[in-house]
Image (cartoon, rainbow, N blue to C red):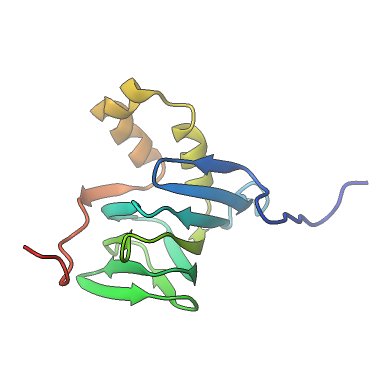
Length: 158
């Protein structure tokens, strides 16, 4: 008889170790019949994610360790452990680690799908990443609307 629940320990679950972060899928869209995905994201000291939005899905971030500068709908927020940010569909957002130091957060994507995006990215090569049409199709498939780089932060020296 199969279990009616799932349990993953530290460092377990499908994971994607990128140049700027190491993400673990803790609860996949398959586990929830597409309702949501829960991921642990270990942000490396170089992490930054450009401005983007999602038309159909919401994201919730719960910060566990370190500090993250989070840009949402024109406002900057310094997120420390215990902070929660919820981003409804259609709201532009971006983020970067603060003070060039690692951070860790939980992410909920509702409905699910982002785990599929990461799985597809993991199969791609440098030529795929450089191909604008390939990236545009992948972003469209997973409800990602790129809007540009991380906006200037008030603390940035110009």
